Figure (cartoon, rainbow, N blue to C red):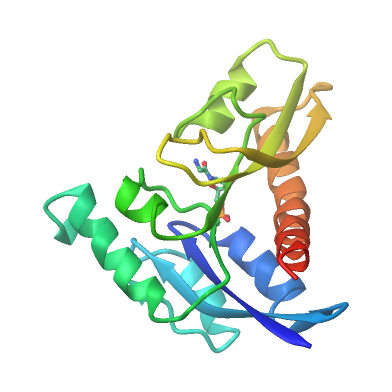
Length: 192
Ligand code: GAR
Protein backbone atom coordinates (compact mmCIF):
# COMPACT_ATOMS: atom_id res chain seq x y z
CA UNK A 1 0.00 0.00 0.00
CA UNK A 2 1.39 3.38 -1.04
CA UNK A 3 0.07 6.62 0.40
CA UNK A 4 -0.44 9.34 -2.21
CA UNK A 5 -0.38 12.87 -0.89
CA UNK A 6 -2.34 15.72 -2.42
CA UNK A 7 -2.66 19.47 -1.81
CA UNK A 8 -5.94 21.22 -2.58
CA UNK A 9 -6.02 24.95 -3.37
CA UNK A 10 -9.24 26.98 -3.32
CA UNK A 11 -10.50 30.56 -3.26
CA UNK A 12 -14.22 30.32 -2.57
CA UNK A 13 -16.94 28.20 -1.04
CA UNK A 14 -14.89 25.03 -1.42
CA UNK A 15 -17.64 22.60 -2.42
CA UNK A 16 -15.17 20.77 -4.65
CA UNK A 17 -12.67 20.63 -1.81
CA UNK A 18 -15.43 19.11 0.31
CA UNK A 19 -16.21 16.51 -2.37
CA UNK A 20 -12.52 15.54 -2.45
CA UNK A 21 -12.39 15.28 1.35
CA UNK A 22 -15.60 13.22 1.50
CA UNK A 23 -14.72 10.87 -1.32
CA UNK A 24 -10.94 10.52 -1.17
CA UNK A 25 -9.37 11.64 2.09
CA UNK A 26 -8.00 8.68 4.01
CA UNK A 27 -9.61 6.25 1.56
CA UNK A 28 -8.09 3.26 -0.16
CA UNK A 29 -8.36 2.65 -3.92
CA UNK A 30 -6.81 -0.69 -4.85
CA UNK A 31 -3.19 -0.44 -3.78
CA UNK A 32 -3.10 3.28 -3.00
CA UNK A 33 -4.34 5.34 -0.08
CA UNK A 34 -5.05 9.04 -0.67
CA UNK A 35 -4.39 11.71 1.94
CA UNK A 36 -5.16 15.41 1.61
CA UNK A 37 -2.06 16.64 3.46
CA UNK A 38 -2.59 20.35 2.96
CA UNK A 39 -5.28 22.82 2.00
CA UNK A 40 -4.40 26.34 0.93
CA UNK A 41 -6.32 29.47 0.02
CA UNK A 42 -5.50 32.99 -1.15
CA UNK A 43 -8.66 34.36 0.52
CA UNK A 44 -8.66 34.78 4.30
CA UNK A 45 -12.50 34.53 4.34
CA UNK A 46 -12.93 31.61 1.91
CA UNK A 47 -15.78 29.27 2.84
CA UNK A 48 -13.57 26.28 2.15
CA UNK A 49 -11.53 27.02 5.29
CA UNK A 50 -14.43 25.87 7.47
CA UNK A 51 -15.05 22.82 5.29
CA UNK A 52 -11.41 21.73 5.63
CA UNK A 53 -11.52 22.33 9.39
CA UNK A 54 -14.30 19.72 9.69
CA UNK A 55 -11.71 17.20 8.56
CA UNK A 56 -9.09 18.49 10.99
CA UNK A 57 -7.21 20.42 8.33
CA UNK A 58 -6.00 23.94 9.10
CA UNK A 59 -5.78 25.72 5.78
CA UNK A 60 -2.71 27.73 4.97
CA UNK A 61 -3.73 31.27 4.01
CA UNK A 62 -1.45 33.11 1.58
CA UNK A 63 -3.21 36.36 0.79
CA UNK A 64 -2.27 37.47 -2.72
CA UNK A 65 -3.05 41.08 -1.78
CA UNK A 66 0.05 41.09 0.41
CA UNK A 67 2.36 40.53 -2.56
CA UNK A 68 3.60 43.14 -5.01
CA UNK A 69 3.61 40.82 -8.03
CA UNK A 70 2.20 37.51 -9.28
CA UNK A 71 5.74 36.11 -9.26
CA UNK A 72 6.33 36.90 -5.58
CA UNK A 73 2.99 35.35 -4.67
CA UNK A 74 3.84 32.22 -6.66
CA UNK A 75 7.23 31.92 -4.94
CA UNK A 76 5.43 31.89 -1.58
CA UNK A 77 2.94 29.29 -2.87
CA UNK A 78 5.62 27.00 -4.24
CA UNK A 79 7.77 27.28 -1.07
CA UNK A 80 4.82 26.36 1.13
CA UNK A 81 3.49 23.51 -1.00
CA UNK A 82 6.98 21.99 -1.44
CA UNK A 83 7.19 21.48 2.34
CA UNK A 84 4.51 18.77 2.08
CA UNK A 85 6.14 16.65 -0.62
CA UNK A 86 2.86 16.05 -2.46
CA UNK A 87 2.25 13.79 -5.44
CA UNK A 88 -0.31 16.14 -6.97
CA UNK A 89 -1.62 19.68 -6.49
CA UNK A 90 -5.34 20.13 -7.18
CA UNK A 91 -6.74 23.55 -8.05
CA UNK A 92 -10.38 23.37 -6.95
CA UNK A 93 -11.73 26.84 -7.64
CA UNK A 94 -8.36 28.53 -7.08
CA UNK A 95 -8.97 31.82 -8.87
CA UNK A 96 -5.47 33.02 -9.59
CA UNK A 97 -3.55 33.39 -12.83
CA UNK A 98 -0.34 31.45 -12.25
CA UNK A 99 3.13 32.22 -13.56
CA UNK A 100 5.81 29.77 -14.75
CA UNK A 101 7.23 29.94 -11.21
CA UNK A 102 4.22 27.87 -10.17
CA UNK A 103 3.65 25.85 -13.32
CA UNK A 104 7.28 24.78 -13.75
CA UNK A 105 7.72 23.74 -10.13
CA UNK A 106 4.52 21.90 -9.27
CA UNK A 107 2.57 19.11 -10.90
CA UNK A 108 -0.97 20.42 -10.83
CA UNK A 109 -4.43 19.88 -12.28
CA UNK A 110 -7.23 22.42 -12.57
CA UNK A 111 -11.01 22.16 -12.68
CA UNK A 112 -12.80 24.47 -15.11
CA UNK A 113 -16.59 24.87 -15.44
CA UNK A 114 -16.81 24.72 -19.25
CA UNK A 115 -15.82 22.53 -22.16
CA UNK A 116 -12.33 23.89 -22.76
CA UNK A 117 -10.96 25.38 -24.90
CA UNK A 118 -14.28 27.27 -24.92
CA UNK A 119 -14.97 29.98 -22.36
CA UNK A 120 -11.65 30.36 -20.58
CA UNK A 121 -11.26 32.75 -17.65
CA UNK A 122 -13.13 33.78 -14.55
CA UNK A 123 -16.65 34.29 -15.97
CA UNK A 124 -16.91 30.98 -17.72
CA UNK A 125 -20.22 29.74 -16.30
CA UNK A 126 -22.08 32.92 -17.21
CA UNK A 127 -20.50 33.13 -20.67
CA UNK A 128 -21.29 29.52 -21.48
CA UNK A 129 -24.88 29.94 -20.29
CA UNK A 130 -25.38 33.10 -22.34
CA UNK A 131 -23.98 31.49 -25.49
CA UNK A 132 -26.29 29.67 -27.88
CA UNK A 133 -24.52 26.36 -27.35
CA UNK A 134 -26.87 23.48 -26.74
CA UNK A 135 -24.43 21.75 -24.42
CA UNK A 136 -22.49 22.80 -21.36
CA UNK A 137 -19.75 20.94 -19.59
CA UNK A 138 -16.71 20.81 -17.37
CA UNK A 139 -13.02 20.06 -17.82
CA UNK A 140 -10.11 18.79 -15.73
CA UNK A 141 -6.74 19.67 -17.27
CA UNK A 142 -3.06 19.84 -16.47
CA UNK A 143 -1.94 23.27 -15.34
CA UNK A 144 0.41 25.01 -17.75
CA UNK A 145 1.64 28.58 -18.08
CA UNK A 146 -1.22 29.29 -20.49
CA UNK A 147 -4.40 30.22 -18.61
CA UNK A 148 -6.89 27.32 -18.79
CA UNK A 149 -4.77 26.00 -21.63
CA UNK A 150 -3.00 22.85 -20.40
CA UNK A 151 -3.57 19.37 -21.78
CA UNK A 152 -7.11 18.13 -21.20
CA UNK A 153 -7.44 15.05 -18.97
CA UNK A 154 -11.21 14.60 -18.60
CA UNK A 155 -14.46 16.28 -19.66
CA UNK A 156 -18.15 15.81 -19.04
CA UNK A 157 -20.95 17.43 -21.00
CA UNK A 158 -24.69 17.90 -20.49
CA UNK A 159 -27.52 19.14 -22.69
CA UNK A 160 -29.03 22.59 -22.22
CA UNK A 161 -32.70 21.55 -22.03
CA UNK A 162 -34.58 24.55 -20.67
CA UNK A 163 -32.29 25.14 -17.74
CA UNK A 164 -32.36 28.47 -15.93
CA UNK A 165 -28.97 29.97 -15.07
CA UNK A 166 -29.25 28.59 -11.52
CA UNK A 167 -30.03 25.11 -12.84
CA UNK A 168 -27.15 25.35 -15.33
CA UNK A 169 -24.76 26.27 -12.54
CA UNK A 170 -26.10 23.54 -10.24
CA UNK A 171 -25.66 20.94 -12.99
CA UNK A 172 -22.04 22.04 -13.45
CA UNK A 173 -21.29 21.70 -9.75
CA UNK A 174 -22.99 18.31 -9.53
CA UNK A 175 -20.81 16.98 -12.36
CA UNK A 176 -17.68 18.62 -10.93
CA UNK A 177 -18.12 16.94 -7.56
CA UNK A 178 -17.96 13.57 -9.32
CA UNK A 179 -15.45 14.15 -12.11
CA UNK A 180 -12.69 15.86 -10.11
CA UNK A 181 -12.35 13.16 -7.40
CA UNK A 182 -12.61 10.41 -10.04
CA UNK A 183 -9.85 12.02 -12.13
CA UNK A 184 -7.57 12.44 -9.12
CA UNK A 185 -7.85 8.72 -8.34
CA UNK A 186 -7.15 7.81 -11.96
CA UNK A 187 -4.03 9.99 -12.10
CA UNK A 188 -2.62 8.71 -8.82
CA UNK A 189 -3.28 5.08 -9.73
CA UNK A 190 -1.65 5.54 -13.10
CA UNK A 191 1.46 6.91 -11.33
CA UNK A 192 1.95 3.49 -9.72
C1 GAR B 1 -15.94 25.62 -9.70
O1 GAR B 1 -17.12 25.72 -10.46
C2 GAR B 1 -14.74 25.59 -10.62
O2 GAR B 1 -14.97 24.95 -11.85
C3 GAR B 1 -14.48 27.06 -10.81
O3 GAR B 1 -14.68 27.61 -9.54
C4 GAR B 1 -15.72 26.89 -8.88
C5 GAR B 1 -15.31 26.61 -7.45
O4 GAR B 1 -16.39 26.19 -6.68
N1 GAR B 1 -13.15 27.29 -11.29
C6 GAR B 1 -12.84 28.18 -12.22
O5 GAR B 1 -13.66 28.93 -12.72
C7 GAR B 1 -11.38 28.23 -12.61
N2 GAR B 1 -11.16 29.06 -13.73
P1 GAR B 1 -16.18 25.66 -5.18
O6 GAR B 1 -15.36 26.72 -4.43
O7 GAR B 1 -17.54 25.52 -4.60
O8 GAR B 1 -15.43 24.35 -5.27
